[in-house]
Image (cartoon, rainbow, N blue to C red):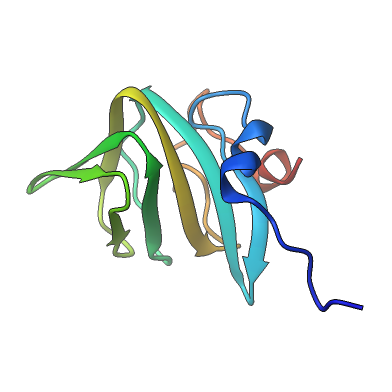
Length: 123
């Protein structure tokens, strides 16, 4: 018996039905692996107690920070440090793998119609 079941990252995006609505596809210790499709503007937010890694699988993502904007393309990744306010934006559909602790709130302490609970992300 194998210790784990292999997964296909590109196929994992089939679970995502809405933009900015991540789905948990795996876990490594207390870190969740989430896939999300992004298009348009997200909300300014921060995660006070957790770092958040963005890995761009497909497309291009701009992340605005108070000090400026970073542009990530396919294959790029970046860790947003805990407590740093940021706002993702994708002009066209972008596929992102997020790696973050299970305790990370989707939109930090900001609650908007775009906010998804961990339960919603697990479904």
